Length: 438
Image 1: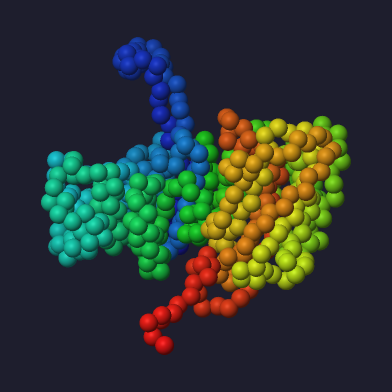
Image 2 (image 1 turned 90 degrees about the vertical axis):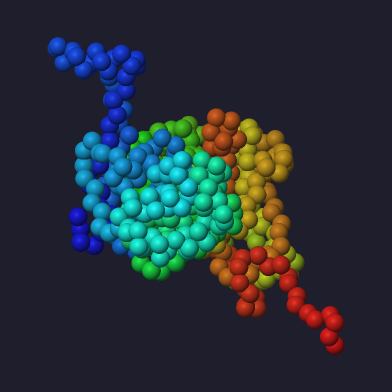
């Protein structure tokens, strides 16, 4: 293992034998000729990566991609078929709801049992026990058998035990999804404390916003293979393109080559219409680092930002009324189109999002070659800071939720100006007064 790594994974693979019938195991075991009665399912194949001390790495991917299997192998609860895993430092894991808990034991007894499995002495646990109970917030239930706990109480106690045993490495597998919003906020505050303390965190989630907000790196797993790894934004875009792109793009291993306008070259090659010249790059506040993908059956080729006083060029004002005019051209007639609008912070947190499908807005009937002008009107009710605005076209699809037609993430850099001093994201037009004092 590299001396600079807390976790080092090399050529990791995990195979499972699949038997159609239980009797086939016995037949294979006693086969004189060594005949095989099983097929092989590969859950992980040639997975390699390093996690440096102090990094927070998020693992994303669809169900069945091997994420949980990977974490179980890193934790040592599952043996790999091939490859190696090296871990440096004390490791605490929250792999699944209540993993390692004995339902007949009380919460107190399970805390000591879990800590012992982590190699923590009884004396250390005794010193930290009250911190664990306070963090879990389950009160007198700490003395009750965990078989009487709700799912939320399970995860509270399991997480509280894991983070309060001073681990060097914390591994979490989507187990926080059952916690209420207050407990989730407490957990992520603890994440931040652990990050500042130089702890290493590796966690699986389906929330790309969490990866963007909390991770220094990300890994995208699909079908047991690493499809992408690196900066969270890049990995998330690879994941979203694979998830919501056209069928032909999601089946391939490599992103589609793109032309100078940023359109995929090899998709929908039979289009009759010429693509309109993309004017967005010449408009004020255009972000040259936007990420764009889709099958180009329709394209977003121009936009303009206006306020009541005229065109917006240098940024938006706090509380300003804004209209965003977007120009779209259809290269094919498409049914069930969806138009979307999203504002995010620079670290990828969603501030606001809306689309025509969720609002029940029916688009005009359009034929190939038609253009459509769309106007999004909003109030810039944001605290001064830096934001990005994304626009997207998709096609509603019952089997895949939606198919990307032309998605332009972070298309517009949207600085918001105004008096500073407040914090957060939303501007509530707050006033503070003392009505009973002159």
